Image (tube, rainbow, N blue to C red):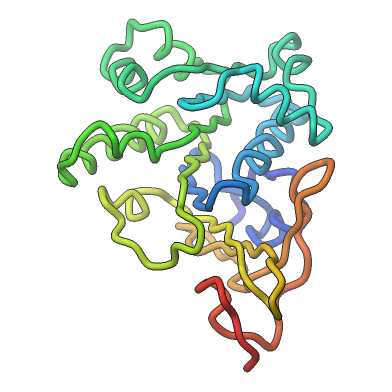
Length: 242
């Protein structure tokens, strides 16, 4: 496709995405705690700010001071971006967030749907599952969220928690079917050593790399390495030689 891509600012990942995300798409980023989902989100928003695109970070679990501290440990100054009007950070609850989507007059809705906002992160969508035990109702919640973001053409990362070592699970609410893409971050055991793997599972409307690649997290965020070679069952968490 010739449509302009939105780069993530993570060189190896942008190569896997054939240049970045298509504008207005909603991407699910899945991974266990500590795999770097938030770091990836920071890099995505900071790259947008560098290109003059306002970003919005909606968090349900971490106070802003905690996010500032996490970002600073990676070399990112979120406060400076806020002062420059390039980033908004909102701490709220899943229930309040959903209610705001139903009420165009709410302050949160106006922040989310501000025409200047082109990139957004929601951390984490796992909390929506706690609002209902009915998978049909949960699918309606996810559909309203994704449709609202699509309608406003906001390119969004939805962060989703997995338990460590989790490989196959029922996708309650079927969020993975509603999003335009899925990026999976995974701990893997290789020769009795824990490493980290990243793969693009889906990217609707676009080609993408299918290799599972090494990555590390250092100052500056995620650093994508070479694909895993000569091993099977990497995404199971315990790989073995071919």
